[in-house]
Structures are given as structure tokens and as C-alpha cells.
Image (tube, rainbow over all chains, first blue to last red):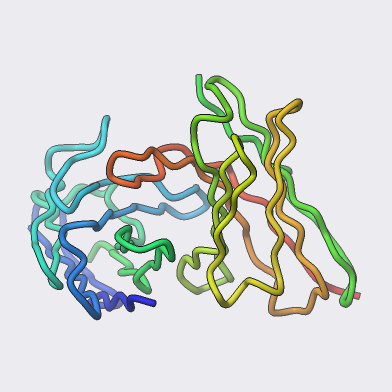
Length: 107
Length: 119
């Protein structure tokens, strides 16, 4: 199986800041990477698909980039509503592995 | 509107089996694969497997091949996941999700069923 490594595991930032979460794959996944946001007590929600495409209804403050084995999620101008855990997911192979998650908190 | 409805909670004894349900509505059930995802308290998301409601074909995470069995009932547009030989390690929230082919993205999720395995 392809292993997904996210960093950092947790992150604390202030309102208005820009933060970046990274996700590394154990092999080239050719941009087949999705990001999900999971708020406390809620189901995960699709955030970015195909590494760079913003899901319907999600804020343009979120953006994805990357290729090959390295990917990142950038959140611009942090809002209190962005407090959540963020997961990357390999969708290249049949076994759709998730990263361990990055917990984002406000300072 | 698209909905995936899951029971809120299940309580079962160790060693038993349980069949979790995921009732789909608001779209053509047989056109989208249904996936199942596990989340233990304080831990990340684990992909369990997927099933094609149109033909019943399924794929599993190797880790769950002897634990989970995925089925569907087209007449009731419901997907099921049976978990066997339950232990405390199976206590978790289990989500079902619909996959869109383009981008392999999970665009709708159920609310999750909290499974508690306890005597």
C-alpha cells in the first residue's frame, strides 16, 4: 500500500495567518490526492480533489498544490471556523489510504 | 438532496458480529460506489473498503479483509457492512461515503455510526 505522511501532526495559528500542511506519498501518485476537513463532532468534508481543485462550496481561502510525491494544503487568512483536523488521501490505487491528520487550533 | 443515513450508535458484546447500515437517497444508488471509513477515538481515518451497488463488486483494505464484509440491497438502496468477531479494537465511528468517479472524491458522507464493543 502507498503510505501517506502528513506534517505537522498539530498546528496552532492566529486568526488572519496563513498556514500550510504537507503530505508526502511513499511513491508517485500523479496528483491523485484529495484533502478533507473534519470538524469536531461532524463527518469529514471534501475540501480539495485532484491535488488542486477546490470542492464545491468550500472557501477560496483553501488551495492545494503539489505533484509526484509531495503535496500541500494552504489556508490563507485563517478564520475561527477553520479549526478542524485535515486529512490527505491517496486516490491513485484501489486502497485509498489517508494520512494521519493535522489538527489545526487557534492561538 | 443526496443523503446517506446511518444509525447513531450500536452497542454489541465482544465476540459478536454487527451489521451496520447506510441508507442512500436523493440519487441513483447504483451509479456510485459506497465506501466505508473507520475512525477510532483520537486517531485518524482508515479506509476499510468499497462496494459497487450496481454489481456488488467490492474491494477491501488488506487489514480489514477478514473483519469486514460489504453488501448492498438495491431494493432498499442500503449498503451494509458486517463486522465479525468484535473486540474493543473495533470500537470506533464508522462512516459510509459516496465516491464520485472524477477525482475519486468522497462527495457525501453519512453522519457515522458509533460502535461500542463492551460486555
